[in-house]
Image (cartoon, rainbow, N blue to C red; front, side):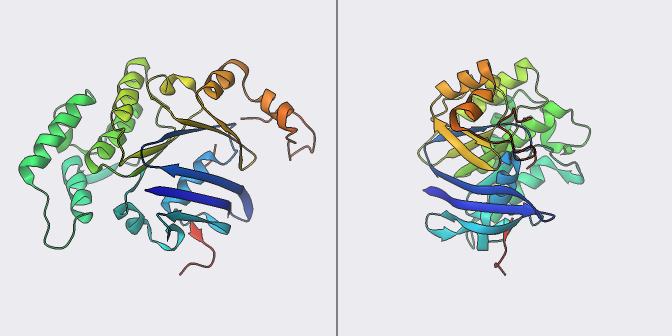
Length: 272
């Protein structure tokens, strides 16, 4: 399967954030996007998933040739798109097990049902893999969870739902060293011919545990450079000034070739 983004422009509150993003991801690949704060990384994840606050003004996103932008959020999810959010919400009154089981059921065809025995077995294993409390299935979603527990809970949902394309928006923020290793290894363990990930991060630490195949640097709403893991090391050692010099990138706020302060994170304008 392939997710293809072409010349994607998007805005919020009449402010253009994405200014021509081009990116192709195939299942079997692990992609990372790095870049300064405010450059559009989280906006890209929100647009792919269908956050209605963001309006696509130009360009396209297709999933195996189908127009993703014309689909509702739940349709995108059923097609195999998953978003691990930067700031997961708390939902009182709904347990983790009920939520995940309902999400799995929604992806099945008519007259198909989630096997309760298989569900419990897989849930228990995922909880153990992530070294989470065994009572987690019976707790309300993220209620009373620490920041690190919320992030691990996002990965738990990913492991259970087994999406084709997982977008992980700063999943490493709020994690201590031990939790970072656990999360990274569990993401890496998802690798298969039917799975791809787009990992949005500022730091090398998480990517130390993931066999990333493609690395992209995003500045001023565009992907300006792509390569392999060597880019991770260069960014970790030198920041982003070198790429501005190399590509002659102008800080649009001053119209000068200066350091860019390194976050923010849709629907098609014409979609109905």
